[in-house]
Length: 241
Image (cartoon, rainbow, N blue to C red; front, side, top):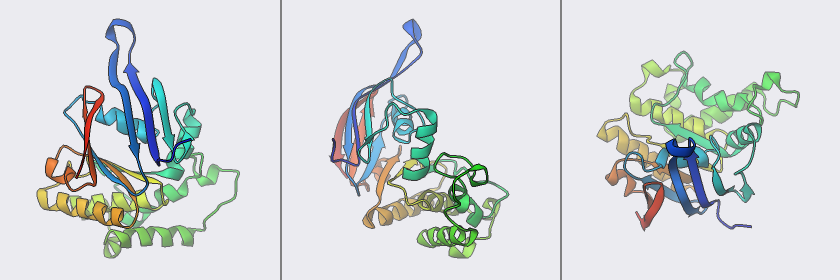
């Protein structure tokens, strides 16, 4: 019914019940088109993380609707949400979330080892859609995209923070998702490394990727195409970056 890649209407999330109920999102309306680079900002407790969790199909709203690529994912069960996450969403987290004993290449390959139900392919009854060589080729291509081809066989402890976040971005790209959700992707980085990560996100945006980034840094948010401000669980305004 909608023409936007992402659209939420009257999105509400309440934690708890009765007197201890906390409204994290209070009737949020938001639309993001394919190819946009949107930054989401707001003070602590504004609802940023809750909104990101719902956009990433990690949680469901209490009320309202969320359409992703034309599909209403608001009321999907956990298994269905896992399928959507695996197929359509690439995540980049503040803490990188890399496997410490695996090489950069193997970390990037990880999403390819799971089927559409979020289960290891070895446990799947369906066909193995990609060979090991194909998965490795896709992972190498993703590492090349973020400029880390020469670090493919390095473990996370052999990489700088900025390089680890590049690996995380490559991992987010490897399944060719509809959207990339970056949750404080520069939160653990120095100023120079932070700018390098935003430059990579900018390059991906210029290539047509849809990116939603949460950040506390106004100067980094200003480099996005559009900024959405949250306060007390509501969108207070949106502006061009």
